[in-house]
Length: 137
Ligand code: CMX
View 1 (cartoon, rainbow, N blue to C red):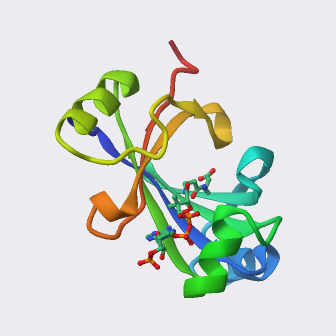
View 2 (cartoon, rainbow, N blue to C red):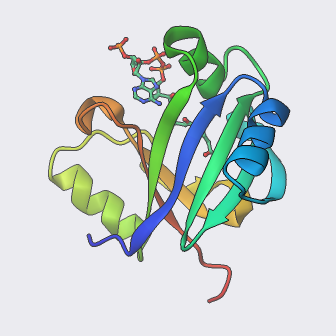
């Protein structure tokens, strides 16, 4: 596996609108999309910086992954997403090397990407996402 770039950094926030204001007014970035990802129980806001995005994540349910994360650890960096080619093969390869997968099979994430998570207990405490954009194929 050889990621091409960091696709996005996911940041858990309590209030999406308040956090968007910081990224826009203080850091000078533009929020170009807000999207509900229902099966992940999050509302997301996106900013682009070069090839990489910042993805703000607000929980829409206390029992969702981001709701639980904020309850336990507070706001902060939630995950790092690496862009890869051939995500199914990548998952097979990392699993063979002993990494615990959260998603053995990719699913649809925000912006229509194919995504899969690796377990933070296998990745030095950093929840790691692999993602592939097949929309232009
Ligand atoms: N980064 C690092 N560690 C994390 C973590 C994160 N984002 N989320 C949970 N953990 C740790 C917890 O602190 C806990 O550690 P300890 O046992 O040492 O206390 C351990 O993982 C288990 O956490 P938990 O709160 O009991 O939660 P679960 O085991 O039920 O779930 C996880 C944890 C990572 C498997 C789950 O959050 C998950 O499946 N995440 C992937 C999906 C996701 O995060 N979606 C949101 C973003 C979607 C998007 O980008 O569109």
